[in-house]
Amino acid sequence: MHVIDLRSDTLTKPTPEMRRAMAEAEVGDDVFGEDPTVNRLEEMAAGRMGKEAALFVASGTMGNLVSLLAQCGRGDEIILGDQAHTYINEQGGVAALGGIHPRIVPNEPDGTLDLLRVKAAIRSDNDHYPRSRLVTVENTHNLCGGAAITPEYMQALGIVARERGLRLHVDGARIFNAAVALGVDVKSLTADADSVTFCVSKGLGAPVGSLVCGDRAFIAEARRARKVVGGGMRQAGVLAAAAIVALEQMVSRLAEDHANARLLSAGLSELPWVQVEPVPVRTNILYFAVRHDSLDARQVTDLLAERGILMLRLGTNRVRAVTNYHISSSDIEAALAVFRSICS
Ligand SMILES: Cc1ncc(COP(=O)(O)O)c(C=O)c1O
Image (tube, rainbow, N blue to C red):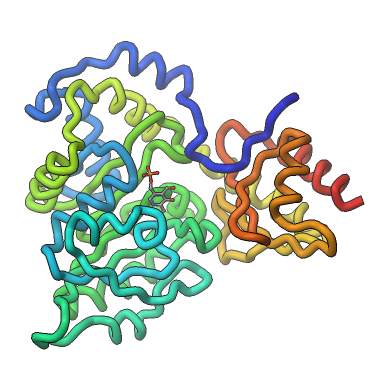
């Protein structure tokens, strides 16, 4: 059976070019700063994000963690959305390992944080309060339908943060999806941020890794934080080589994933028992609710799986589908045909 796996873009396997680059990578000890391929990747990543420097880390979770450890001390507070990956899906690592207090603001459906709520959440100087140190936003926003946050919003948030002396972090695990979907240079999404994490192991298809980007002083601190969480890697050039291919070859093709997600959204929207969650600009993530008289999300995903269509169930009614470079438009048509057969 041909399996069409729409559970996640993290399932993507390295391309033949990546495997070749990995096999041929020049390597050294990266903890000594002597891996030429890692150094090249970090320089490239910094350039793409419009920052002075970058750091190669094992994962998006590690990237967010070291970014926040590098900018906040124990008892400091970060402001973030109630749907943020860092709040929900990173084991509360900033609190557990860094003593950093999370202050939650509800995410708007488009993934943003209401600026008035952010302003209201910033603490005044008072012995009773933690110190507000940093605001973090996610772009694209995973749990908010893969929503792409615009340069205009980032600019406005940057002003709010700077006016109150707060730093700004972007969890840009899928920031290239945002840039491609919005048709903007990725730098326009990072210009206002002090730190950015982006992943090469999601839609970009590399097997491992994320990059943390910012100014040199911040990256020096992030490097220390990476070491204390055990993230100092040695001949990491074998991984960096694939990441370089990802940045060179896999960014512009994300548009295909977005087109396939739109195709899926349009087809699903024709079914009376499926309610697709809307977003202003579709990227590669799509969520829908199951509104069937006799089927819940578990039953639907089980029926789909029996026919080779894999999607991720969240709770009783919510389902996630993520397009990626292994998924073609004919796969989407095939998945929609299975959906229609469930309905009948
Ligand atoms: C928005 C966002 N941030 C961070 C992460 C964490 O990345 P990783 O799984 O590489 O730790 C994810 C993972 O899906 C994510 O969606």
